[in-house]
Image (cartoon, rainbow, N blue to C red):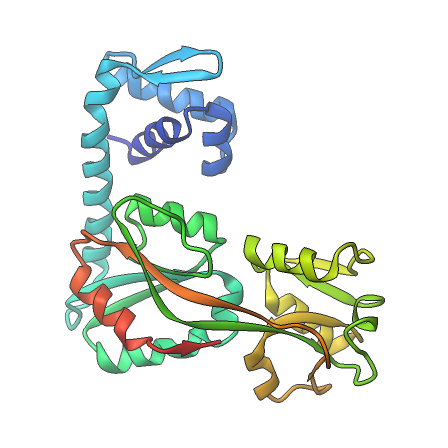
Length: 281
């Protein structure tokens, strides 16, 4: 059995749309259709009722669904167990956005290495939507998110706080002039977008729009400007020196560890979460 065929079947069932499933799997719609047809030919049954804008599982598709979930989970666990070294007992997969890793979260991994020496740690970076999808697919054990999705059978536990401040390498800027030239808009999620719109309204178009804080930081290393970044950057040495823009409002948001409440790795996940408390970025 080709595991990719099962992944495609599950994604089409989840999205109920071949086009959206293709986007999520980074495939073309034709490739998704071909995979589903190949799986149907292997099983000798139709898995979907294909009505326009209304794709539904057939009775046979409903029967396959739990088996597909189980097979994918077993395959994922098999790959991880085979990769373990002789002195490792268990693997834990943790994920966060690129920006959270870049601004302090990566430094917390040393706690896991020290306190759980027999654990094989896999740390990955993806957008929050992808991390949530990986949690559902059981390819990720715990995700660190600012805006946890409301997923069934998942727990979102607050482990710390992220404080965003407007920083600049130009000491002459204030809360009004910081947005006029060289402003970099960093996408920190829907809540930050609402905060930004409410506090500042319509602003001149930023010189750069990014979802990676490290790119904004690199810009400020080379060009004059400003950006909302974690407060921790003010405690680090930079050339030129970064300063908090006086009078600019700050944005604070809880940081959550999101994991499956019924995970078969719940013990090690609980240990990882507790080791990271409290966390300030």
